Image (cartoon, rainbow, N blue to C red; front, side, top):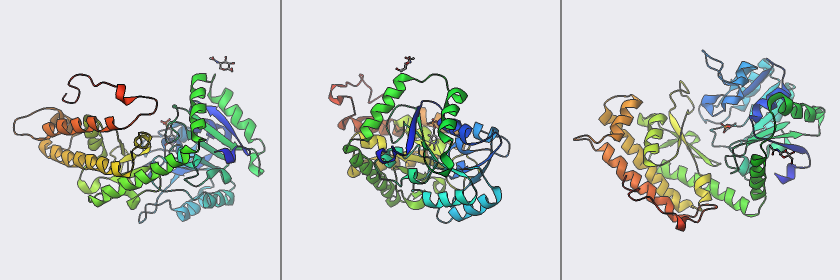
Length: 382
Ligand SMILES: *Cc1c(COP(=O)(O)O)cnc(C)c1O
Ligand SMILES: *[C@@H]1O[C@H](CO)[C@@H](O)[C@H](O)[C@H]1NC(C)=O
């Protein structure tokens, strides 16, 4: 993000940056708009349900979600414009936890200006790609940009807040953000985390970072197209960033079940709501990301192997669901972990786990000489 450094100040904030930013920009009960959680938004962007205000962002502020266009599953900017015209938010938040395409910050800026609203981008997921110049640059258009440092930026678990020091909206922004971080929301800093963030930012400034980010995206595209070629459905049919959002609903499988099964075989994925889900509590899909595998030097050809593992995991989940004879997650886990007469699923879980455990040993791991690692006796068979 060096090109933005002159115009914005970066605060190293190992706490909940979004709440500090809302505290700086808004008065209690002011209105904000963020992408709805079931459409890929984050909890901290104002999420609430019919029964409950779920997060501080909806408890202390009023919020209205905007969403995706059902036909394309892309942000519906025109609907957002109409909603904002009526709702008159003080703040529009863009950015997502599960959105595989890029953002139109220019249009968002125009909508914010039409309503005298601040524009904040939460680029938590994509900040490593933004730093590489491989996603649109939000700094040109946004008053505030927040990010976590532990996703594609590949740093420790922490946050950053950037804010504009120039322009009409920025007069007292610096003081308000500073005061919101300390004393409003945070005590003393964690110096160890700050050192970790600085190390991550130094890595992101190296010439090799751009190639890394490009490879992350190329790998995600390949992983996505490999899944599509095996007959699976992705939200927006593909990706332009590090993330693949896999819609499992056509298979009659929930994200929770596939997540459990993948845990059992040693693949870390994340259940996730997909657009159109009735409830975020029963997510209809999963999220996949390629940044960690790319840090292990994996390339497009390796994504085919990964897609095969995932394909086998899904097919196995369908077998287990049938053998469980019930929709209950508890019963699914029981049948996946207990060897029973005449049932194939649990045996296949162990077979797949063995292959998955063997697979990553071929690749280097940053900071670790993998050739010196030894497997505990019987690890692959256990
Ligand atoms: C991950 C994420 C955050 C922060 O969540 P953590 O639980 O602290 O990792 C904030 N905003 C967005 C959009 C995110 O994806
Ligand atoms: C963190 O670093 C600052 C600046 O050097 C120092 O004043 C402070 O005492 C340190 N805090 C801790 C807990 O070490």
